[in-house]
Length: 140
Image 1: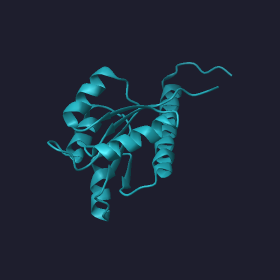
Image 2: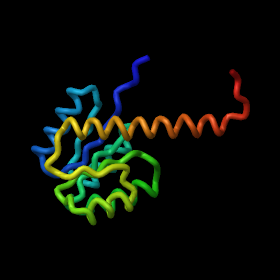
Image 3: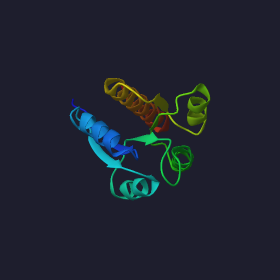
């Protein structure tokens, strides 16, 4: 059984970084939508099914931490924070705001892909467990 390609939303204001991430993920069987700020993110989420969001912290307008907090209040879409702010306190705040993972820049694209796959595996396992818990009859 082949799993469908995940739909990844990349929110990154630096055009070069955004383009490189999108290209790498597309070359590794991901469907990618890439945007530069929170407004574009909201528009993209209204149009596309999103399986995971890669969210930069330092964005023009509303910052990534605030966007992360709002996203988490609205749903359970996995979020990986990707940012140049890699101090311990920055990672802790990102995770406390609701991020599922936090990767400081510069980063290895293979590590980003591995983290995406790990977060998506955990999400799928949690969904499977909750569907079993909600079942009224189990048949073996």
